[in-house]
Length: 528
Image (cartoon, rainbow, N blue to C red; front, side):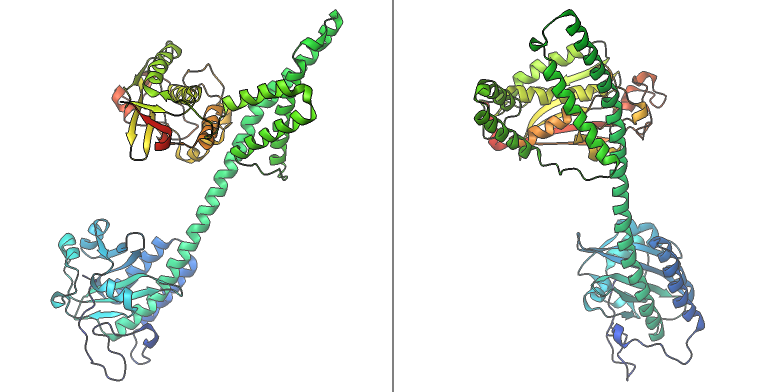
């Protein structure tokens, strides 16, 4: 097995000995006399492959295959160091009878073991003539793979900044490896190390590009959705309001007692959203959005200023402040708390009522007893919003499970549906608000609690605001149903009508989403 440093010797006077892996990369020189042209071709071909491809797996296959053919050995491969696990793993290995290649996924070599560890630590190549009698051979590799190592070469993969792993050749077809073989392998290792380093940089660039594409797609999708949900209804409302005001004026009704000003103010707010969309479309700068908590602080400042400048509005402004604080309290405000068991009972009844004729198994398990120090209406809003989300994403004859339980971190409320799930590339946008999972041309707001009823996503955005203000965590895990892998694939809305599922149990095991609301210990009171 190529994981052993081999015996040291003092043969080959006049140059550093290779037996015992005492030869350094700086001392390697290619002999001018009798050097096999095929081996020069090996170095040339590896350099050409490096220049012609960014596919590291293809490149390594070319190099490892060339090593086996030119150096005439039974196996060759690349062993890389995993910093996170502090061990080595096979990036690629080939051997004639596929002993190593078939077992490579199940074998990892500890950092301080075998030839690979020695070569990696010292930076010297190793030439091993008698692997069977070398005490540093890492035996578990042979035990797991069945591959028997007679001799080997192991050389370091070294870049300017760090060592990446080792390159090795195993079991010369005839006889044993020699110094010239080590020189070829060491020269070849430079190309492999450079390829690995370039591949790492290239992979980072590709991942960055994919992330930019995802964000750009999310932006475009959000713009289409905002246009679909806001622009047309807004124009209709504004035109209808103008007609209504004219008709009221004709009949002589005083407008002062009617809420036209409030309606127009909210229309202006929606117009502001349209302007922001225009800024995004035209790639113009828009003011940086501050965190939600800062927005609320700014609102409090605004109320205080208005108190000073408009004393006559003090009572009205104070009422607004109280209503706002009740809707979005922060963690500093005292809360008597709410017993979760009672909330589960009431919300279970509410869910059964609101689902109406939907054929769903909604199960509220009896929660671990606890009082959560949070305003009751907020806890109800969170739980109701998650249950509604679960119902709308679960086809008929599906199942929804609601639980409450203690954890080491505090207490968790879990709302799990066995429904369609969220596509992986959409999951990072779930809490952004105004972002539909369905494609825009397939999306339409439906009756609440209906299958894929949709909505603006405001519930989840509001929950995120609550979490920031009060100090709990909300997260989710989701697996998209394999029958509808993308957001353009549609579920029939009833498991019994699904061509992919022969039984209801097939659907329950093939997708779903679990939202987890995690409260820290300081927001809890344990009920006895």
